[in-house]
Image (cartoon, rainbow, N blue to C red):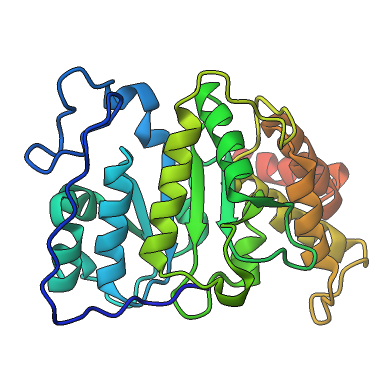
Length: 304
């Protein structure tokens, strides 16, 4: 869960980030150019790390999140079903974005999480606790190390998904990710402001990308992990197949589909494995004989 951080009337001077030897364009005077002697932005491939905000209710948090990822060298910000569709022009969002206006303006807006995760092969749901029947749960440092190894091995984009300020991510969105992830915090007050959570996550991800020997011991070694979109197609096809054979009653789903999503998340399927299962389910929904008969009728109709 995230809480919106109230702004005070006192004038706060902006922080000026000290330029470390490997710093990536965090200077306020030239936000798109690295400092002299600094490593290239592209060396960390920031476009392969996506930060997704689901149903944010405060435009200021979107602007602050844009600045948070920019200071860590990242660029890809996605917003899902924001309360204010025109958040890019909101005064508070612009004010809190500071020198990350380009990130705010270039952020993509999507109707659903599945759309925002298009092409993503490894997604982490940022939530403070493990969900029942949910995906495997990791602490943020462990998740960042796994994501860094994934990016460095060029296995596809990764994404960190954040929920709305008051209630966090809904179960359905957590289940669409490969892992859930928590920021270690004081259990007596573990709730963080949304932009703060994005900042901590971006920092951990940058830190994990720095060493050359990052490993992916925390997750299965799957070089061709199926994308979120492919897993979603598989899930919908499995739902149809289970209903066809009478195992699943859409009117009384109970926990069947929730457990199925959890199983798919833990399986770490490759693209080819997922496509194989999609084909099997399609054959259950419409057997080969029925498909052959339909093709014959279509062929006969075209001759006439």
